[in-house]
Length: 157
Image (tube, rainbow, N blue to C red; front, top):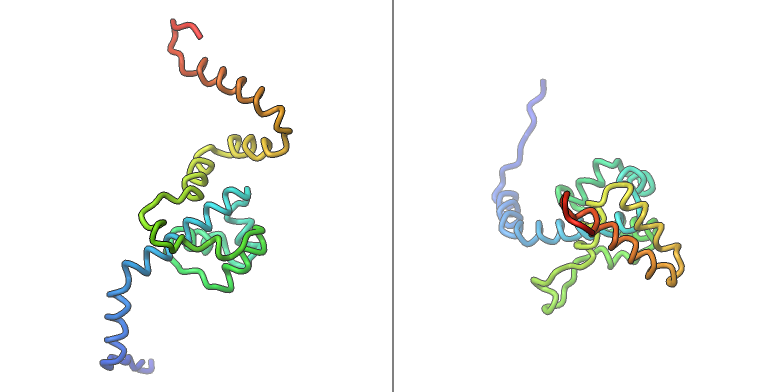
């Protein structure tokens, strides 16, 4: 078996140290991009497997992008944007000073939608096909059902 030379030169070590120093900010950005990717994917109604196939990666790789375990390239951001019908810049976290520390409504919405389960998501996406006039009536029905479901036995609705 041939010996493999490992380069432990000072320049290589310095590069690794510099990377470690920026890792917190770097990780935050990579995770924010992943969270926005997941949010837009979920809002569009795409599974990880379907989107991964459309952009040429496995669902496991897409999952790593979404969790921030792996960084996503600019080229992949462009592919994702084309497939999901969004601008690649929408996948980037807000950069304005006013936005720092503020909530990201896109990620919050995706979190709620992601927690609904497949039936809840199907209902939510079907709502977009309803005329606005039907939404008011549907809201009343849903509120009535929700309040009836929250009553404990022995209480009246």
